[in-house]
Image 1 (cartoon, helix red, strand yellow):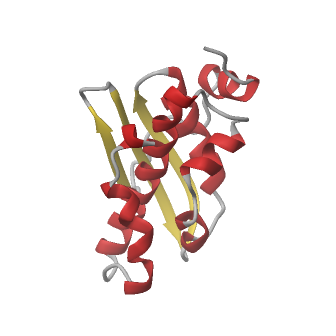
Image 2 (cartoon, one colour):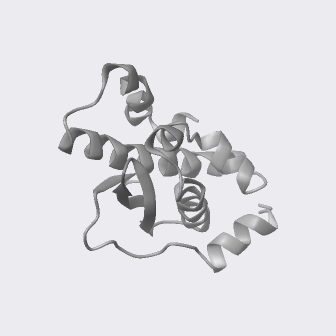
Length: 143
């Protein structure tokens, strides 16, 4: 299985690993059966993600996609982060082997699970934003 240089770089030198003690929200997704579990921590101020960290138990692709997803959302508004897709994460890594695309979906789901928690803790999810959370119902292995 061939991995891009970017995948290998984010696996060997992951960015944003760790926890945020006073996180505004967290999202945990994964499946113990397949072995990939991701937890994303977000620090949000004035509707902007000022910090994102992750802890991932899984394969190299799971670590790389977690790393890239957090890099892609830091500095973004909540609305901008809601548009993150698994395809965008995979493209930012210069691609993933088809058998590993589920890792990029898990990264998207972890970010959106944290954003969902943020909304729920701050007045609820606006109706117009609910569609962005449909991805949380998808099976990562159906990608």
